[in-house]
Length: 199
Image (tube, rainbow, N blue to C red; front, side, top):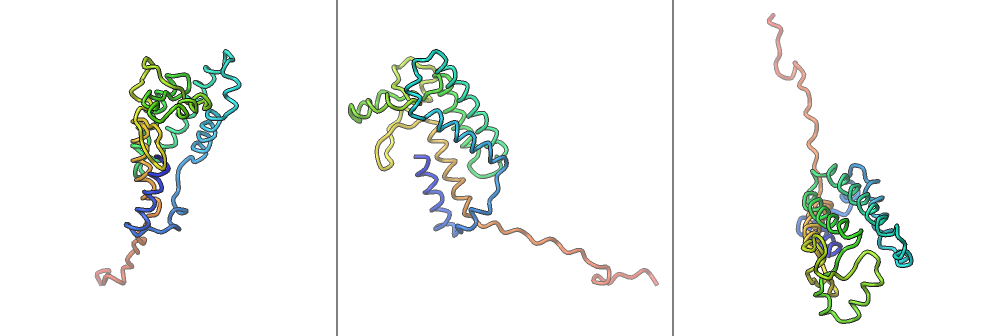
């Protein structure tokens, strides 16, 4: 959903707002290294090898520490770039997702509605380390992936995902926008304005 929202935002900016692809590469963000580290931690939390460690006593506390670190870096990056369109939605959605993930041992609960997608969908959850099937008593469950959504296939999304998608659409639409900078105002020379020294 989030990637689809970004693609639609970019298409909207290019086609309906007459943006340019070249403008995307001219946009500048503060502290981009924080975003890349956060994405690296996201990959680590979602990595398949996590399944082989889930019986270790330190595994779930480690996931919590990594999730806190990941979302802290992401929030700082978003806050430092808060003047760009969509950033406040991205911040709010990321905080919502981060809270429920941290409260559930570094994993995102999946609502029981996923059972409507068949046994294969339920079985797949057990193979993905950063998700688990909710039983109904998890903390902050209302922020979990509870809502079915279709984007070239059905899957579950959270309230945070909805806000992130709105922010991503706005940011992607902005990325292709041409920025017209005002020319520096020329300083008028005294001779150009009929200056006299009183003689």
